[in-house]
Image 1 (tube, rainbow, N blue to C red):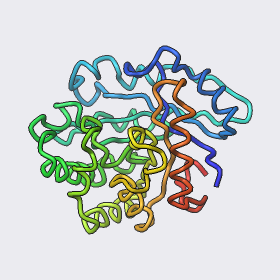
Image 2 (cartoon, rainbow, N blue to C red):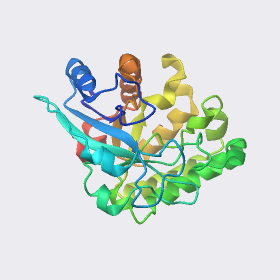
Image 3 (tube, one colour):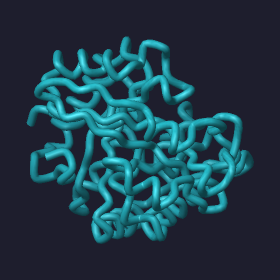
Image 4 (spheres, rainbow, N blue to C red):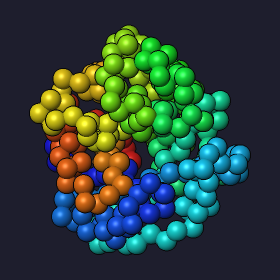
Length: 263
């Protein structure tokens, strides 16, 4: 199957993105890659819920994202999404009013680089972090806002533990994963196949990683998927996209496995 969409792109509306990460530059990339749908998923903390949880989210509010104009491109569907955060107290930083205005919502449970999201002591303990990732996944799936969640971004990948994420993930049993993914299927929440979660690994060995086992289990459970490079810099787009292509082939993803949003 040829990948025809990427709905996890960060523009300059995300403070962590490069200056070149403009919608226009991504549109040019999409044309070259033959994509028919792209989505901008900039970070958000909706101040209608509460003040920003840290300096990173200060100013990255829903109103700012929703007020930004979207360019148009012939032959390419351009969607306005967001990447919403769940803090360590289980508060989702997106109001129902704002969620209704986005074309889709990605939510994350694994930003372990933020102590306001995952406690620093938990981050340092692989066993506790593994348990916390599972608990937080469940919190998203069971959240009162779950009906607005299109997909869970980079599931189980602790971004603050990029050097030892396999050590964390092997502590999550297949049975636990199956329970969690079955719950996601029941709630019609898709799983994002995220290139950034594999970017530190050689392309030829991604199938040996614990992260790959996560996705294999999700597919076995009948989860629907979306693709996302999680790109913050257009210069690395080709490299990120090559990981998506490899994952698509290894997981044997077909059109039937895709979330309705991106079909």
